[in-house]
Image (cartoon, rainbow, N blue to C red):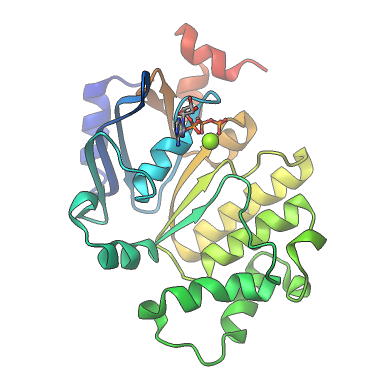
Length: 258
Ligand SMILES: Nc1ncnc2c1ncn2[C@@H]1O[C@H](COP(=O)(O)OP(=O)(O)OP(=O)(O)O)[C@@H](O)[C@H]1O
Ligand SMILES: [Mg+2]
């Protein structure tokens, strides 16, 4: 594990962060969830955030994409202060930040093709009006190995397939950053492994930077280049998987007990 000074030294060699969160605070009534959370994601990096259920991981990520307003703190994405963006600027920035919701959040009444076309139509400013969406839809589906599912409805897909389609829907806008909220939750170990493999391939192919929220230790071990443990509303510890897994601190150890 590294202390604050070491962290700062290491970070100064990595260039500018593509995402920066400083002193983020968010409460719901008496429930103080985030109490000064900090994070920096560097270009091309896979950063894993681990925290217990209810620790505020989804709240943090919702603040990050402007779905929830923090009480205070500073959030910067690709050099832009989130609090100063107009709605249309925020919308434009969102096309650079793919978000894989906890669950999958496909539109149940739309086919797979229509689900994938949706972001293309919503974010016209990125690609202009796409007359023929088929090549983009097919490319995204090929990337997740599910071209054959193009005309299926979400109800016809397994949990793992839904997760892949949701990932394809995120990829179709060719984002620079992908935020994954619990990408393997609810999946069996083999399907989880496939999704993790897919995440790694996507990062290699598209050179994306990823923030991965999980409480799956196996997922963290495989994908994390660096990890942050969210405990008691703050970034309690940071380091590589091995650094954190061998730490003696009780609260850190609790994460790695199987
Ligand atoms: N919209 C909301 N209104 C009130 N409380 C909320 C709201 N969203 C989240 N919370 C509370 O914030 C806390 C953190 O929730 P969050 O969903 O971020 O947890 P999490 O770390 O993502 O958990 P999990 O691993 O189960 O997904 C919980 O106590 C939750 O009840
Ligand atoms: Mg959550």
